[in-house]
Length: 385
Image (tube, rainbow, N blue to C red; front, side, top):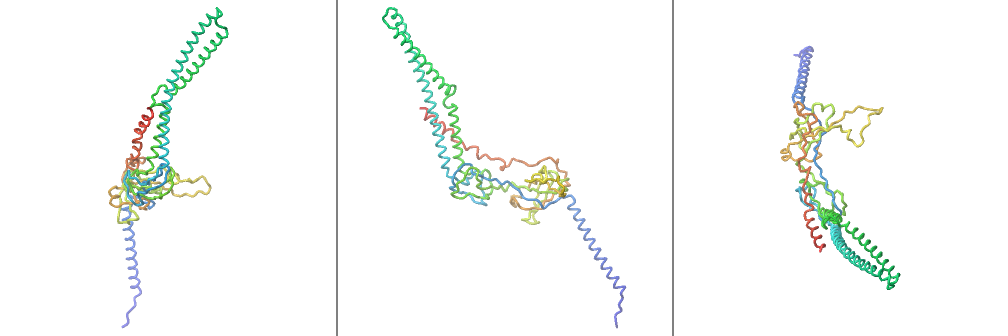
């Protein structure tokens, strides 16, 4: 028996299926929109965000030849560790020269003091001779009345008196000049001695700085120094990266920043770890200017071919130290960052950035002059004798 074809029923079934599919698509779309609205409506996000940190570049502080390298890239170093050693020949020679100059200066001051005493005695001797000649002149004048002494002898005596007076004045002027160089200060505090001391401190400091010391703890990167390199002061040698002090620099569009405030919570997904691992942070501050403002060549919008482009503003986000310890990061990693703008946060101009970490100060250079003052005293004492 042949089946009867019912076109109207077939069309009706097809329409029902299309309606069901359409309804399913609409419900799926509404569910997605509802899910997005529930989870994301209070968040602003960007994938233009990167992990940042302190890149502390160590440079040679004095001239020398690299003779020993005590660290390598990826190694962890502690604050105060010696990383690179220079031969220090130039600085050692400069230190020896400065010490010799101090000794010579001390001897010169001692010599000037002795010269003052010498001039005093010389003046006393000349004054005694002058008194004697003056007495002779009195006798010669009395004898000249009787014809016992010639006028020539009297004249010669008067000339001798003037000569001795001139010599005394010359010695007194020389004595005054020498006293002006040493008057009012002890040898140890004489300006020339202080100047020589400063040269010794500078040379001693350069000699101490032949060893490159780690100012902070961290990981070594970008080692450029090689054995035998003759480096000058200011030559970059390596970098230290403290991985326990990192943050996120997220660049949000200017249309997104209206609700961003310091103190708001942040979720960060790092590309290196995928979506499974989420870091949590806090907004620490907003850079007072767009990226183009601080560019090397700022844009000039006062032109006829202006095209409006949404600018980006940099937001600094602090990371959770414990999460950093459990899952370390490296500066430069890309992230997807979103900020919960439903939280009130703090004033827009507030900064929650703190500068009390090791990356902002170090005390390893505070004791570089230890021992130099004792060295200076020994030089002064040995040359005053």
